[in-house]
Length: 400
Image 1 (tube, rainbow, N blue to C red):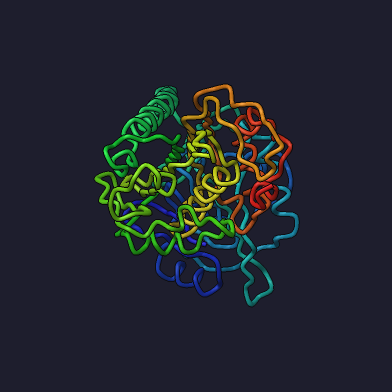
Image 2: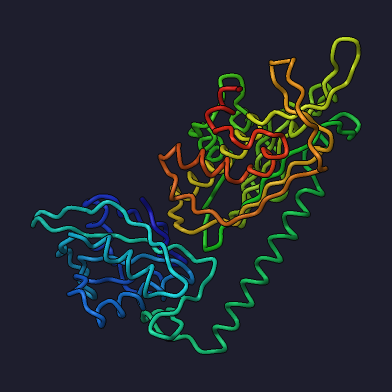
């Protein structure tokens, strides 16, 4: 696992004893705005728990790490007793801090002396600043400090501004629809799906290029036997907004519109993607045209995007949350495609489906069940409109 410990530094890997030793000897663990060092937690009493709460709260604005078992100033690795440490820190984060925090705990790194170094990530919080001991806490290059009233107001206003900017950026992405120009004549007949995600904290993508994006897509595990979706994006998209790949080299006919998809990792770390099969106008025997939606394909599109966020977070040491938005268009009157032609579902009642949420990708790394559950939670309204809200992620992936 790698961690962001400030501007001008590459992400620091702290998963093994070798990596930890290298970081300590290289002076990469100096206490600053993103890093707090502790030899040990100390006894469980009000004073110690309050001090811990201050440390956690102070790191929540920009994100950072709290490391136990390392001596401040000298960076000597001495280790600590990790017994019940995670439970105790979780309790303090949940009960002493307002609003509560959710630190990310990583496996202890064993030292030769039998003790452990514990690296705890505190992601940038969507509801920062957080209060401990009746005061709001932040950090400077010297460590934690109390925030002034002016600073607190500025942070709250910045959050509002970020939310407004996110909404405008998402609407602009939907309006521009990069797939529209990939259909001959620019006339689309299908509904399109749009995904947009922006990191809430600092995410530095150094020298990110198409080769790196292809490598990330190759690692995506979410797929169906008959559909690769975003994994089939091999061709450069020439997107002015960032590094993009798409499924085709040149424009296609309306008949093949459903095969279009594109993904872009933008220069600011944002991820945008779209696919042209949120609804598909199919011509049936007898020339009857029926507007279908494919819930399995839609769920796969969302799940792949969520997995891509986790891969980017893991590769670039980003521990924070992402603001995400999904929109499916062209749904009015659409029916769910099924191989059971005796089934007559109720047409979808609205033109579009939209959902927006803050998610934490590091919580589902290597956890397919968690990823599937989140996908279904985000799509609940869409599935309810199709009368299949009780379906599971596995049902949809298996084409039920």
